[in-house]
Every structure is written in C-alpha cells, then in structure tokens.
Length: 446
Image (cartoon, rainbow, N blue to C red; front, side):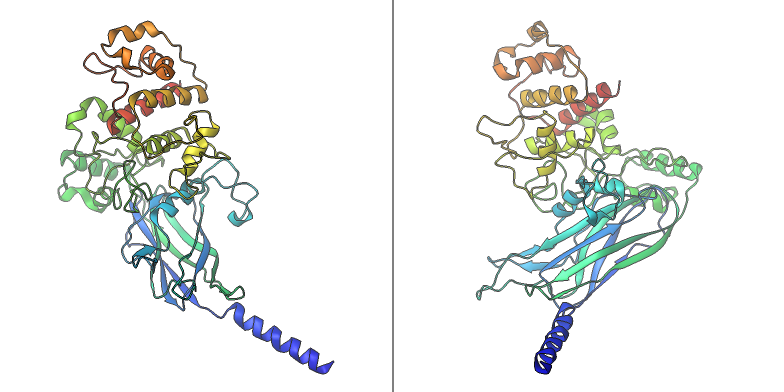
C-alpha cells in the first residue's frame, strides 16, 4: 500500500510539473503620446517562449474610451512553417477581423459576462484571439510556434480620454502534450490626452486644405495619426485574407462619438472621377462600413466581389449572427459571418444548388436584388413599377429573377442608371456599392 501511495504521489508531482512545463511571456505595448481621436496599434508581443502549438486569450478594454477598428500591422508577426516550405502568420489579420466582428453568444463564458448575443465583440470590449498549428513535420509531429515576436496587433481609435488599459487575460498556451499547458496574462495601462474642440477643428481644416497629401506644421500629431487610418493592404476588394488575399485588412477611422470632438471626416485622394459618389463614400468610411487602402486611396472604379458587398451590407445594417451558411463558404473565411447573417436575414438566397459563389464579382442586378432584400429586412417596402425601366435602352437585358428588384430600386430613386442604361449585367464598382449602401441606410433610418 505504501508503494502504491508513493507511486501515486510521484505521478501527481510529475503531472503538476507538466501542466506548466512550457513557458511564454507576453507583453502589451502602445505608442506614446496618444490623443483623443487618434488611431494607434496595440501590440501583443511574445518576449520569451519555449514553443507552443495552440493559444487562446481574451483582449479586454473599455469600449467607452477605446474603439477596436481592426487589425494592426504585421511587422515581426510570429509565423510557423507550412508543409510547402512557406511561412504563415500564427494569428492572421483575417482571424483578428473575424473575431472583432463576431457576435458572441450570451452563454459564452469566455467573454466574462460581457456578451449579450446582440453586440459584436468589438462593441462590448472583449475580443477572443485563438488559433492552433495544424502542420506536421516529416515525422508527423505538429510544428510549434517558436521564438519571439508579435503575436497580434490590434488597431484602436481613442474615442475618450483619461486613464485606461488594454488587458490580455484568460490566456492558455499548450503543446501537443495534453498536460503541457500554461498561462501568461499581460496588460498595459496608459493615458489618453483630451483634445479641445478648437484644436481638433484646426487639425481637420489643415488636413482638408492639404488634400490629404501631408499637411503643414499646424496639422499636429493627431493629424498625422489620422492620415494613417488604414493599415496594410486593401479593403473590401481583395483576394483572400482579412478582407484581402495578402492577409491584411485596413481599418478606416470611424466617427468620433465624444461630445468634445466633431466627427472625423474620412477622405480619399482618388475620387475626382466619381464626384457623384464622394459624399456617400465619405459617409460610409466615417462609419467604418467601407475601407480605403494603405496609400490613402479608395480605388472607386475597382469591381466588388459578392462576398465583399455582403460584408459591407452586414456592417451597415449591423446584422445579427446567422446559424448556417452556403456550402461553398468556408467557416474560417473573413466573410463567413457576414454571409451567414445576410442569409438568416433573407437578404441573400444563393444559387439553386446551395452555393453562393462568394468570390465572383457582383453584377449590378444582383446588387439590386440584395439591396431590396436589405430594405425589406429593415422594414422598408419598396414597390416595383416595371414602367420605370422603359427609360433604359438595355432594360431587356435584365434577368427575369432580378426585374422586380431592379424596377423597385429605380422607382425608389436608389438606382438612377447611367447614360440611359441600367447595365444590369455589368460588374458593380466600389463607388456604386457605396452609393447604394448609403441610400439603403438613409431609407432604413427614415
């Protein structure tokens, strides 16, 4: 009996040691001199590390002071090798963007009671980050994330002032050994300086007078920060990552809701060819519905994919989470939640075979079909008057399934056509998408 007890004690001690056999130390950092209205990156860094294969943790902050607008830069981001010899970020910008825009369930205890089943993780101030390595080496052993560097970077906007903090808590690192797990919480306390109404107005004026091309000395540090309202890579029109293929998304400055600061106006330097769309683009950009590019452009004449139009619609209407999706929408796609939400809202129906073809370019007639569905979801009934289509020389090209929606959008003044044509089967541009979505919002708020 004594031998059995001794063996049990020894095994217990061995297990206790293994639970914390690994070690990873995190550090959270912010730039100095943050002022109210600024956008800035909060970097979560691994400063020491024995190697891990999985991680999850909760990034928590005060949403009345800070607004999380997306992923930050990817400089120095931790990677792990893929089977083809390439490297992949352990926490990608697309993963961050998905978690920021996700609506966590009220019953999900990971969110420390903040989740209400209605608001996004960004809005409640509690965003989960989690991932695991699934790539094995030649011996069929999972590869590990080793070394030090940036685990993740989050882009915030300071919408309040005073003392605040960003905390990474409930962390759990592990390896393939089921008992090899450990914790490493971290936080950063900092102060956001308040900005007077007068000085903010001067900053905005300076930015406008410079045409967004780098203002004069009166622009101040707040102005230069706002000019960096986009992070790396593109926004809604991209290939296959955060909102893009290069695995990067950018966060556009959103309207400041503080009573001390007038709304920050977002402008782009390449809208001269679409003057008719400028107020709509700037309105949606200020609300974070549409994004620009890292070089300060919007690329208004680029075409829009079906999935990206739905992403913009979902943001604009703040659609609640859906419960299922189309067969060709991968669960980890950056647009998966938006498409699922739009499907549940009756805005999109997909193809007859259960697919959605998310990466196909969206035609103008399909955009109008979704637009009518969005208005119906918002409680706005738009009557179809097919006689309104007689003004267009190409009305015969409208597909039968879309004729009701196109005539409804034209009758309601949401779509005006161009050059005497409605161009139903032409691809939708970013400028056109912004105008339609902005008008949907206007009608929904009447």
